[in-house]
Length: 532
Image (cartoon, rainbow, N blue to C red):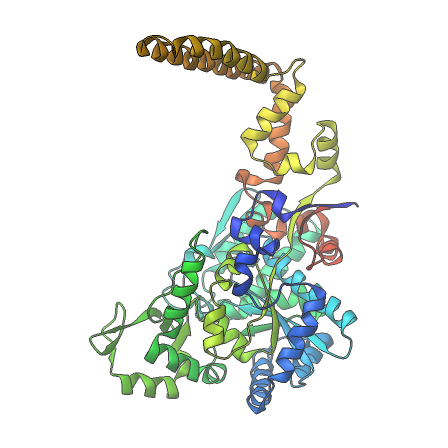
């Protein structure tokens, strides 16, 4: 079962910012702490050890205590239990990824994030055996955009959970998911793997109380034996550790100032997120609203709740769980409560992390190493055989569909569909006319220029018509190419952003996930093609 790859830079699916980061462009150097290579983890560990203090010991104890509570109802593997207990040890560090609570994991890259994290921990343990490395999945339980996560795709059909949600999604009760399972079951069909999928969905979503509980159960079933530790940071005791930083945000709006300054340095790129003056939400079970400061009063947006400075600081001290960091402050919260070395995320996540380093420095928190998660294209032997027969490289298949269509038409044609040579000859012929025209009336010069443009345009139109005609001649081969590319890149998008893991599990069972664990190499900047 061969594995191939294409560089992220050549895949065509990553932004200029991410490409420049991967190429370690000097203009981005001040926006991150260390580049993700094996050697730099030694320095990251050393920096964490030098800055270790009594607060870190207390934080570790609280973290372990809360994890034990969160795992109290789950069957836990020996390795996960060992990893949780090892977090008390100052020689233990975490590698973290985070993800939304997508229904039934959502798209495939949920798996790739977690496997990247697990595999990096294994690699670091081999390189630095005197330390322990724990893979953390940070559940985005405090998010509120339910429309982003209430469905998954299965064989080009959308399996959706139709229910209203107004507060943090992790607190949402799992009511109404019986109907979702019924719909999903009808699509799955029969067989051992189909039964395994149904059973997994049922235990995760029909036997758990909340979406956070369901996601924890599901991730633990898939990756518990690999020692994955799943964290829900929507938690009173953990939020207490963040009180000084939330107070700084309420009183001084430091993150707004720092991130705004950084975003000016990133003006040549598409800015991923823009900070608000206060980057905290107020949350309850059915409420998640921005905190705004107007006329000396703290207001909870879209509610009648108002607080003076004294009142909101008292609320923060007594009920820190009511304060939720947004995308700007969530990374800071993560690094405060975890002994973390590295954050693993997708292109969009790394892009907004690159906005945050100065805010970390202002808050005297060490900035983690930022690692782009593994990206994967899953193929089959049958699809590979089709690609070989059509003389398609992986570079071809990753390219823009229209460009691929044109490129292959030119390759299939018996003659060159390229009028560059006649266009150059035409331009040389007109050079003589331009020379003559420059010696006579200006109106003639204008006429010569107009005629040159007209004739060049005519050749370009003929070239387009010839290309169109050749596309018709080779329509059968071109159709097979497009069909194959559409199989691998649904809706001309990345497979990993569209397809749910259940499609591959249905056909290949556990061997599909085992293959991913075997092949993903987090520190290699390549888009991996895995044949199942």
